[in-house]
Image 1: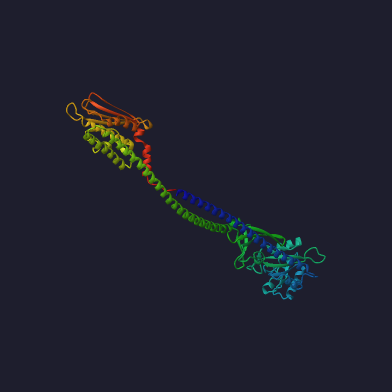
Image 2: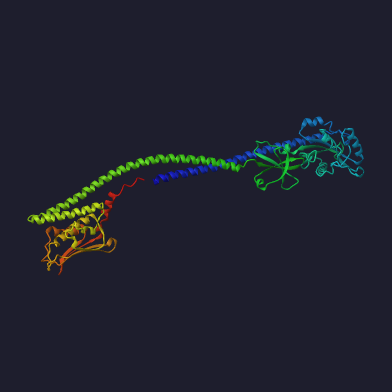
Length: 552
């Protein structure tokens, strides 16, 4: 069962590792694919924005090149260009003609504005405040014509732009560099108008080196640079040139608002640069979805699927393997039971034969030729009774041995109440128990008939001890009958002599001796503890009595 659990655990570990590896690979692939897709989409968008800006800048250059007029004071300078402008592009908010007028041309310019039908032909400041024309000593940039001529646009005509905080520097740079220049982001048409850019292209008259005026185009910033759809993978922002960490973004309504760039999101943003109006513009792209989170979710799904498959495989394997193991265990248990039964029968036969051989020897030597039949009968019954007692004790202990003191019970030893027993309570083996049981009976049966010198039954001392340790331990047994002598004690029978001097010592692998003292009869038996205990026999018996071990 432990092996099955180990194999199942190993399969589960492999499945978990493979699931983790697959999830890791999917995570990396998702990040790579998301990164490639986002980079391509950003590149496409930046390319489209650049194309759009290039077309608007080209329109401004074409429009400035079409000017062929002997005078720049006219208020309808865009009239000849109207068809060309609308044919090229029509997404500008306002097109304008900004004339660079000398102080003496300002009055004529006012008259032209009035003749053109503009509601306020007065030459005035960019913020619609009055302008002291007499104090002007240098050329000024005046908006002389607009397209389309809506009411709101016509109200802008007549304003000077050289003092405008955004348009003034733009016009000055365009005149200095003689190329198209874009302004910083600013409100268009009105102070609260949409945020956009103004592109100014200088107009050079034939034979002149300095610009006579400017053709301007105003564009809303949102459709020009910040346009993207709801299905795009990113949102785009324009870095605000007026601040260090500001950026302009288009909200859901398409209105451009300013915000402060978040350093945390800016770290994962992608920046692209586009050129427009003689300057570079930084577009920052933010992914709408967290690619890392999405990759983790996908990897988690893959890992969950892998773990589920691992659980199914482990479950099926465990079910099949467990059933096979159970069947194999039942077969092995049956085989083991049959082998054990055979071994038990063989062991039983062996022990029965041994017991029968001992009984046969007892009967043969007890009923020897010429013996007294009554005495022989009593001895035979006693000896068989002693054998029966030791077999009963061994059966009770499942042949695991017998306590040595248990062999002196009254049912096996004649007049056991007159025997004083001393010694450690050791357990002897089955073979030793059989020999010692007959030995004790033989000694006790002969001592019972002896008469002491004072007319009393003899007093008997049975003592044993173990000397030494472990493999060198020696078992020493001493039987001493007091108040007896060689003259009064009945002589040992032939069977008794053989048992005392040869059978018992040989069975225990030891030696024995018997002798008389002045007041007693002594029998001593010495044998190694290894043979008295006989662990090999006990181990063999334990194998038969132990329950069958489960098959692993």
